Each structure stands twice: as C-alpha cells, then as structure tokens.
Length: 255
Image 1 (cartoon, rainbow, N blue to C red):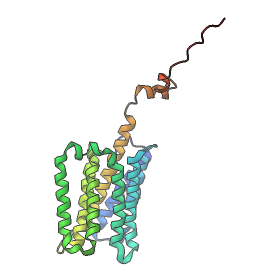
Image 2 (cartoon, one colour; image 1 turned 90 degrees about the vertical axis):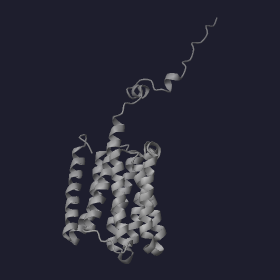
Image 3 (cartoon, rainbow, N blue to C red; image 1 turned 90 degrees about the horizontal axis):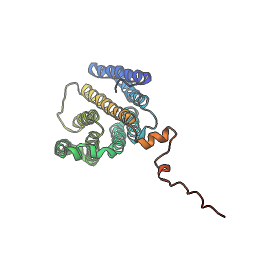
Image 4 (cartoon, one colour; image 1 turned 120 degrees about the vertical axis):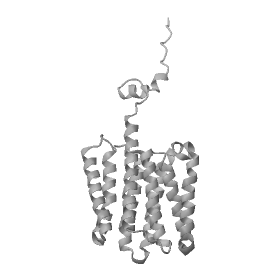
C-alpha cells in the first residue's frame, strides 16, 4: 500500500499476510480445522488494514470496498454453520460483495478498459461465456444464480481497471478464484491438484490487490493539489463565491 502507511496500517497488513500464509499452508497440508479458523480471520484483518490506511472522508470507493470485504467475511464464515445450504449462502454473500465493489468502482468507468481499451472487453466476455458454458450442463436450477453471479463478478473485474492497474490485476485474480470454485462445483471430473490451496491463494491475493489499489488511489487523490481558490479559502482568504460578489457602492452624497 505504499511507504505512506501509518504504523497501525502496517501492523494490520502484516497480520493479514501472516494469517493468509498460514491459511494457504493449512489448505496445502489438509489441516482443515486450522484452515477454517484462519479463513474466518483474513478478511477482517484486510479490512482493518484498508481502514487504517485511509483517512476520513473516505469517499464512495473506500467505503464500498470496506462493505465488500465485510460481505466477503460473511461468505467465509456463514457457510460453516449453514449445513446443506452452505453453497447458496456463500454465493449470496459473495454476490453482495461483488455488488458493493461494482457500486464503489462505477464512478471510475471512464478510466477503465470500457473506455480506454474496449478491445480488452472481449477477453472478459469470453471468460464469462466459457465459465457459464462449462457449468451450465450440470448447474440445474442453479444455472440462473450462477450466470447472474458470473456477470456481476465480471463487471467488478472490468470496473476495477478504472481504479488503478493494481486493482485491475486484483479484480482479474479474484475472478479466477471464483471460477475455480464454480468449476469444482459444477464440472464433473474437475480435479485440480491442491484445489483449496489455489482457491484461497488467488482469493487472498485478489482481495489484497483490490484493497491496495483502492488505498493508493485514495492517497493519491488526497495528495493532489487543490485549486487556488479552495486553498485561499482554507487559509482564511476569500473563497471562489465571495470573490465574485460585487461590493456595495458608497451612498451618493446628500445635501
């Protein structure tokens, strides 16, 4: 997130990295209990790092990212207690997370590939069509929710390119993580070695890159110079409204 991080932000970020490394190592070692507990911890730690790396007023982008991390945490936590509806619970929570990211990143659409590199949209569209096409034959009644989630997830990845290059990479990696989950759930014969390791590695990395991209953009905007009239107002001078208000003329002399 940069050298300008506060001590608190550095501590939270370091804690996130440590717990994320423990989590993916536990996935690799099939230490299910440890993997489950550490999975519940990664998003709160990342949210704390983002919150302490930014300052009020945080604006729509940072606030939306924090909301998305909150829903992501629910998507990590609640399925463990949802029994037979665990998968739908996870999809519902992460759908809300993706919607929060889309709302947060939508104002940056003109900076995204939608306007700057529209040819890149072909790659995102092909990824979505391929993923839904592979899952469709075996999704059954879940086909519509899967397609809707895939569309919102792809929209998030596209719009993240408008935040920064770092966030754009994070959005693409997050898309890959969820694609691995969908392929494992709906494609018979899908057998990626160390599936849990790759899912959680790309999930943690994607979310971290999104948070870092949002934090850097926030810091860059706060460092940007303000217009002269605004600086003068902040210093106690005339603001750009008062400066254009004509002064009253002196009254005409009377006899």
